Image (cartoon, rainbow, N blue to C red; front, side):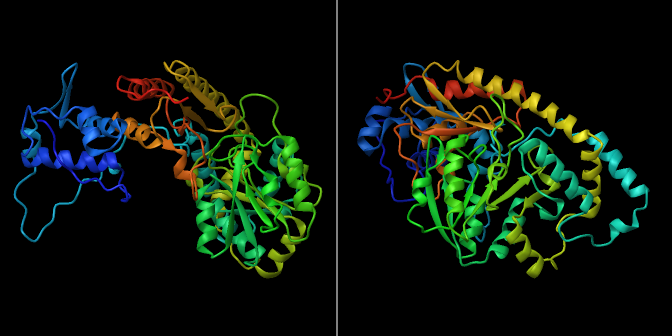
Length: 478
């Protein structure tokens, strides 16, 4: 066919490629585009619709992936024979029913580079089951009672020792509050701090914390990042008195805040009463090169850093056990006004975790996970370096994800769509930005490697290489 007309609205939230894809798909399903019909060439149709050839290519590739269209080398794109597929379950619906629109996002990808996943295949089930069984069989009646609001003292004492030796955090068990997840502790912290504060958060950053702040109606200042993380100069206007940061492995950009930048941030917080830093050390256990950088809390001499950690990364997200270290002043506020709040973590789970750490199982498991994640990191880095065009790798020395700056002329939207059409889910940096996407000529993609096996990492990387660096790409940007 020569051409067809479709109204594409750039003002809609639905991307242009998806609007075009849905239009062609409906035309095929309705029979308006019959089997064997040749679709317009990408160059002609892109010019006719006044869209980029990249956008059109992404729509065509999605149709190919779903079997609606067949790509014939050196000839073009043709409507596939889909009659048998389309007749399955397509009985005429009742006039009172509306057939739901297919949600392509609900399709489970073959490979998912989720930056929040971990390797669940190596969880120490046997040991955890043994400890849990012994805890129940020993008939600890005391564990059926409400324990200390901050968490059981033995667990808090064990955590304080672990933090001192692993992160340089010097604190007493009395300063620690154990809670069901970082978000739960963060909401408690907001009550302790009071609502007459203005927060500064990293942008891009951890969206759940930003949403919690906005849901409380709290004023939020967005801090842009440079290659070293938070730019302390952005705090000079005095608008904010509390900074939330992930200095040991910035989420999601992956940089590690250097010591000189940490010292400037600590200098800022010490200059005025009422200022605090919330240090979210969410995956500091995993560092693959160089010496560990001390936590902000370990460098703080003014008692102004609130330290938050979690066991979601080294153990399991479903355990819902995190911890918060309060400075002395805030601990007084907590004990005066909020000590009546019951602990949000089961005492049985707390006891099992206490034994798991105390008997050395946690240290062994953590060392094992470091080795496993380092191998996976190395496998992904090696696979990416085999890509045919230059790709910059960012933040690969720590944590469970890295970033790719892809310089092949495609936009973030097009990179995600091509990966999705090929059965691989990746994540764009725009999904973690609270207003505008950071400026730059090339898109940045997140790849979490912890939840995939080494073989899956290789296979998924090969698919991305084909999807992103095959024929039909625009000229590289300069």
